[in-house]
Length: 166
Image (spheres, rainbow, N blue to C red):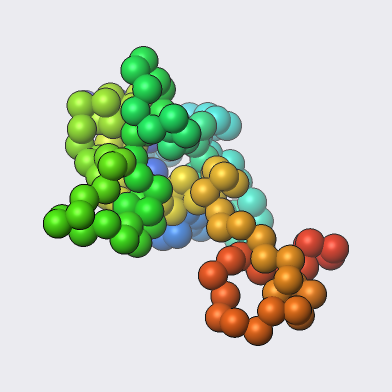
């Protein structure tokens, strides 16, 4: 018997494999669960929301889970994970090592992921979900580039913060 938690995990997996959102009809075709079960799970507004794009209803993945800012505190309900590992860009190598966790499968992280029905997500899918839900993970804004005062290659997130256009 498929539980709501199983359905929730499967929906997260499909959405995050498709950059965090998916058209409702396509999601139904990919999930293959009973319509009532799907609607009940999608009705959880802490986990999913909807939007309309080009006339199609999109389902968007949400989560309250975050990366731990203290990196390793006990009793924490957030992931203990290197954000650069999450991005796939941690500069540390095996010789040098990184002081932060690179294990999605650590005892703590598995517990946190299970609490949020996210234990089936891989690193890339988890990165997609967290980036669209946690503004603290976005790169800093480069005001100099936004005003045309900087010509070096971008290492910052650039947008016009006056008009909020990307």
